[in-house]
Image 1 (cartoon, rainbow, N blue to C red):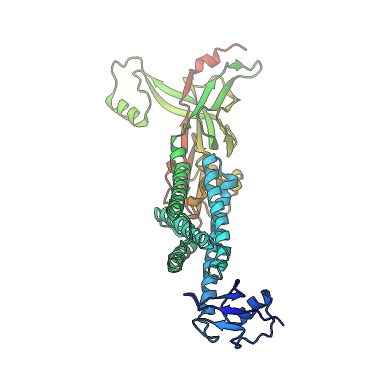
Image 2: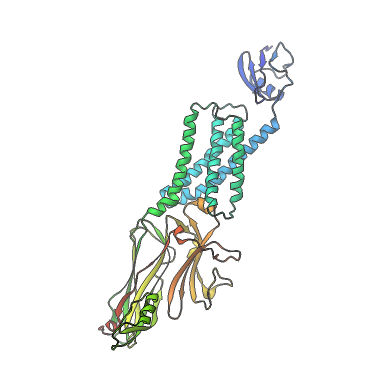
Length: 478
């Protein structure tokens, strides 16, 4: 017969009773049922009479004293581990977008830090079962503590960024709920003194704080500093080539050379572009001897040159069109050159022929556009309801419309979605571009709450006018 001596110690502060068999530790127990389980593992027969004082010694309390509150303890485990898993899922969902899709190294690093923080919280959720259980692992409390601190720090960061705009987002309930959970979890971990057993608590705390500071600094660097300091600059040029007459018809072929060069350090999207060629007609007065005040005031308002003998009377749009495909990606060092040929009849009353190019760019290190933007919307085929308020009469236009996402996904999840609309319009005598970044209003149109273009790095470049005398065309040889 096995006559092993069993000793059951008094309950500790958590209600757990240590068990020894023949002087050797045999685990610990929460209840009589758990005690028998531990004894079977130690080789004690299952039918041992626990009331036999010759076989079992009860110290500090008898066999009826089991102060463990199993329901409360299990509820704490469920709420703590559940909160950590929800936080882990949220961090992974936010960070994965940047970890695999950010256009800068610092952006990918910020995303990877969020993903790693989520992975750490999964480990912490598993450690909850040990720390609120029998604490077989020496550092499970430290792991739980780190998991709770990660939730507290990341939710504080997310709410701080959200507070800048204070807009409704589907993520906001999760931010608020996890923030409240983190406060409760910090209290629960403190009650259990989870930091006990850490060999160097000061070094541990310093490491956690340093990691949080590093993550916050990287977020600021990737979303604010780097996209603001990297050089963003383009050259946009429109020039005339050598004209030539048609040998059989009364017209001149006038080449237009168009160039877009990214001479900065930042890649960019071409949101829209166009060029135009105009013929100018003017009234000529050779007898005038001084500038007219009304004339120069009008010219100054219009930001055009003031001439003594010439007063422009009309500008005729001869040719216009896009230059670079909407949504094109222009890397640093790219030099895009294309030619157009405009046919201009001889015998017109033009005195000058003019050309200009305009393009709108968006920094590729600050924002990106979705695939919907590449599909053109034509005003004459548009369904009822516009994306924006169009003045009456509304010129024909080609619009490109889509969601614009900040290159740091933390900003995307803490704000309402933003949409960008770039429109190339054309009228009888004029053509041009306009763009707008806004959230949508209740009617599904671009809101009048227009976003600052600088926030997403949107800028418009104009080549300025290149001008040649019309007689230079008509004097051209065939």
